[in-house]
Image (cartoon, rainbow, N blue to C red; front, side):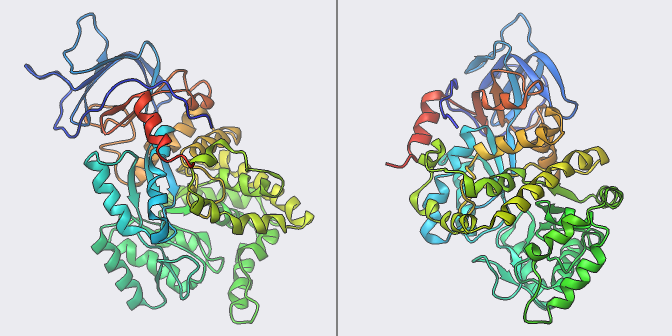
Length: 478
């Protein structure tokens, strides 16, 4: 993606106690006039608005009047379109101490694409992430707000470094104690070696503690069982698709039985059977279950499409690659080698699977399931670039049948609600955090207009074109 922007202004702000009116004798730090405010909850426009910002919060929102409002800085939007900052609800910061700096250098790339909040979905850099959060809040770093799960929960000898191993109820309690002591924002479960009992037990135990849970599911568990225990979100669509099979119970039983043998069945071994037994009637029942249990879904269409096309795509000349450290680029090698070894039959099936995943999105939305927009960007996820991939995800959601307004909801208010931050973020309203993006064109008319960024405001700070260029050029590779 081209990283040239025309972004105005200077640096401002931190926190408020606000009200809608203008307090006598006080000027705003920033006033934006003549903006078409996008109401993401309703998919409508509020034309010609003035927004007053003080200490990182919106303290005034109303029709632009003839009288100027006192402010340290005024930005005339000239009829451009103002949206809440975007949320990427599935990213990763990981790779160990050697990749700490390389991960930190990804932060301004999110901001440059209008992403002002991310949800870290587990890794091995938890201390660094908490340090970055402090630096971001203090204005010492430029980047998005970060919500994090901290370490993943998985079984013995897990795939990903830094995971907490759980098998017994006592281990589950110790792991959750540790996460609560860290003050993580939610619990991320992973399925590489976790047992059925540990997975379901962890969800139930976290639910009793009031902790939000999400993750990958072992195929030895049904989505119904997880949702009924209190699973708050399922990552990716592999597990939703399995729940849409009219043979889910028998497939799950076969997986459970195989775990006692020398050749256990994993997700990819049974996916062809899951795909063949997809049943629209069962799918409709599954969607009703997700709505009833308030279990959200993170489709991650972008990475699925990218990995499907990886065997035939040369990414060597991607413009975004210049901003990715060589050490992170090196983590792409495993998936790239695997993709190049795929048989013609595997490639054909992956194309069919991607099409099936896309076909689930609109019915999920129509049924009332909460969708969360996530890119899965980060080390080890080949060529899924920070910021740019979230914009690609939203475009794919629209291609899959969502309206631009629904896609915007998935990347703003839905994320804020899921993380219980909607009282302070996710929409443009008095009292909300001043995380905003000013666009040249209306995103409700065409979701691709999200790429036409004029101004990014994060924590009330306005990033000028020169400053944003400096931030991203600072991480550009020689």
